[in-house]
Amino acid sequence: MKIGLVSYTYHRFLGDPYLEVQKDPGVVWTMFDVVRKAAELGCEGIVLDTNVMQSLNRPWLRELARAMDDAKLDRVLSWGSPNGLNTGKSPEAVDDLLK
Image (cartoon, rainbow, N blue to C red; front, side, top):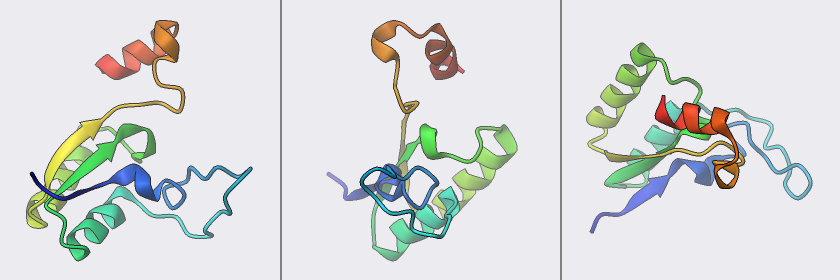
């Protein structure tokens, strides 16, 4: 078993605060900030939540992978739009998941 960090833990910093119950932190992080935080905390892995990632284009993902390699972080990908698959009723969400 490895100790890791879920990127969605920092959703407020990644631009997804629940404004009805949380304050906007007044600062915006990138996924690279989350990788740095995981390394700083001594984590062995990180779960990347696609719904708070700034990009899914290949060059950006390669750069993120290098940052995780440099930090020696294993990774897991967690897909989810804010509403997930909407109980299977959203063909757009299914297309996004497959992409």
